[in-house]
Length: 145
Image (cartoon, rainbow, N blue to C red):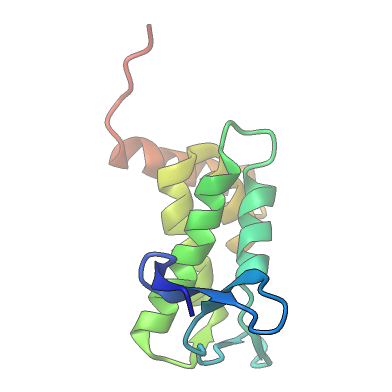
């Protein structure tokens, strides 16, 4: 082994190695095995947690909005990390939906309303108006120039 150091913010180890027979160098990343998380849906069924599904939901909510893809990756990774830190292996899908909504509010208010409308299953324009009013009350007014 030539070199070993922390990678991925201390969550992995990066090792540089050299093949003894051909002398070619290569890099490996070693990470601890993560426990499998399962989400429990509204109907009681279970499925394995997927960071990719969280990311896709955030991408759909942010479609045609000025949001960097890297922010959405951070959002999905942050949710997964938070769930892992909690130590629970089964998480209600409603909890994950709320986590996405909380984080989307800090990313983009329009994306938040879009996601909330699907997650909360809005059926009337009044429901959209109510959530927009809630955002207005919780945010400081922006000064437009």
